[in-house]
Length: 412
Image 1 (cartoon, rainbow, N blue to C red):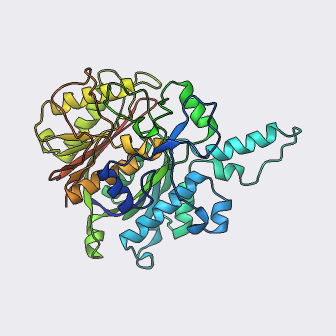
Image 2 (cartoon, one colour; image 1 turned 180 degrees about the vertical axis):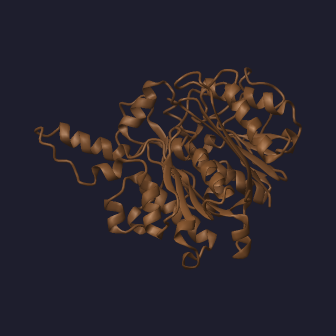
C-alpha cells in the first residue's frame, strides 16, 4: 500500500481567511460568532452565527466563476487555490489523470435554492428560473469547478454524510492514493448554510444556541450551560499526495495520514447513540489501521458541537477507547469556529495537522463549568492553548443519520 501525506493546506473560516490567520486566531481563543448580517434574523429563534468576514469573491474569482456558482462553491475555489499554491505542485509535470478532486458538501446551494424558489412563488406563476439554477444548486459542482479550474482529470466526485462529510472525503482520497488509483487529490469541504431556511430548519430541531445577547460565548462545548451549536460557514482544503511522488518532487510534508474509518450508529436520525457505540468503534478501527495504541495519540480534535446530548455521547465513546490515557488531550474548536456542517471536518483536520507542526493544541473556549454528566479522567484543553509535543492527532466528525468518520494524522 502507498503512504499518503499532506503537502498543501487552504482555509476560509469565521476566524481567518488563510491557514495562517485561522491557526493564529485559534490558538488565541478567538470567537467567530456575532449577530447575523447575511439577512434580517430578528424574528428567528437563533440570531447568531459564525460568518466568514471580509470575503469579496470578485477579489479572487473571475466574473464567470461567480456568476455560475453558489457561495459554497466560491468558498471551495478560494480554499483550494490556497492549498494548490501552498503545495508547490507544477501541474505541467503531472499527468492530469493522476490528480483528482474529492470534495465534501453537506447541504449544497441553499442560497441559490431559496432565492430561485422565492422569486418564482412571489411571481405570477410563470417559471422564470435561471439557467444556472441547477448547476449552482447541485452539491457536486464544487468538485467539478475545482477540477475545471486546474484541468484535473482524475477521480472526481462529492461525498455527503452530513457533518461527517469532510472526513469522508479525506478518507476516500486517502484510500484511492493508497490503492495506487491516483497520485494527488484536492480534498476537503465547504458549506454556506447561513440562510433563512437553513437557520430556521436547524432552529426548529432545537439544535441551535439561542444565546443571542452574547454570541461570542454561545458555542460552549462540554459546559453545563450549553444550549446548542452555533452555525458556521467556510471551507478547508488539503492536498493529499503519494509519499513517493512528494519525495521525488521535493515537496514539504505537513503530516502523514495513517488511519481512517467510518461506522454507523444505526440509532436515530439526528441524535448520536447515547453510549457512543458507533463512535467508539470508528476510533478503534482507525487506530488499528494506523497500528497505534490509544496511549500513542497525543491530541484529539473532537466533533463536540455544544449540544447537550452530543458532547456527552462523544466523550463517553472517548472514555471507552482511551480509558484514562494520561497522554491524551482533547479540545473542541467549534467553540471558536461554530459548526461548519459539511466543512467542519476539513478545517478541524487542518488544526490537527497544525497542532502536530507547532506543538500547540488549540483550546475549548467558553468552558466555565464542566457538565457533571461528562466522564471523568479526560484532559480537556480549556480556555487557553496548551503547548505540548504532538506526534499523533485524531480528528472526529459525526453527522445526522448516524455517520461517524475518523482520520488520524502522524508527524513525518
